[in-house]
Image (cartoon, rainbow, N blue to C red):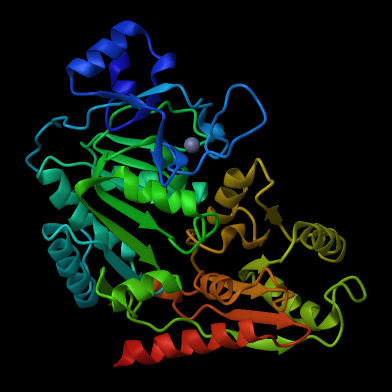
Length: 436
Ligand SMILES: [Zn+2]
């Protein structure tokens, strides 16, 4: 591959890291050399991450905010690489035979409309509404016009899961998957799937920027990442936000008519969201090894060969529960995963392929994953880690298949919290809206 391909497409690169020949070529293609910093209101800002550079008691000042992406010193020069690139024309871009529901079709029309008006748009879709399928026509339209799309999520796992799905339906389009843990080096593609963090490296690069799971960690409340999103979009481009639980700020933007909105209260199969059943535990979950109230449920599921997910607030609680589970149910096959687990993806795959009956997890699997015919159980639901949003997302793991739309969801807790109450109330509200 031509090395220049690794630079093209609105990248912000430190000129010091490039060979003169490449710098010259990029400039002839429209690349622009600029200072690494700019001044505003007497403060110094980093051109790459748009954050303020605080003075350090050292000789060579640099930006600490985006240091993970390579050091930028205040006197450095950057090159912003060209974005006007032509992509091969295809007779057919989208190869997908699925059917959209009338709700999804309405959303598609609203999305295409927003695209034509270069208007930012929020898709508020309940978990399992089929929002990914809904953006296929938008991507198709963008590609047809010779433009470029980025699909981003704050979560690596979500990007990894998305990549093969997009590849399958756009088989002839160049697609890249870029994130901090990826072996794949950046190169110019018409569709780029990446973590939101990667957007820091781009300026005015994308015509359509799709931000999935906009309410999730680490994007929620992160100023640098929000600036990166706006910066990575072309001036003439649009941003699409996707969420089942949109943050207040975006809903306010809708109210102020800064952005437009599509609402999808119904799941793609037309059945309601499973409503959680709540259980008060009289003793801790590890009482007598495993609390007998829980053991009753576990016995039932294990005898019925019912597959299940157990959610825990913290890794140590999960690990000690896993030990008890092994001891009391030696024939049960299960895996446990967390953000610290290097084999996470392989383990999740084992559960997906039904090679194990159960999966124990922290909130790392609260979203972006789809399994069929499972019971979803939250333990210690009163813990602070289980916010309203998290509980709604977790409950949304259940009932995603057409033939298992009524999967069970259970919340076990030692005391009832506002978060539990709000999560259950919102799920009920969404189901009522879907019926209207
Ligand atoms: Zn910076």
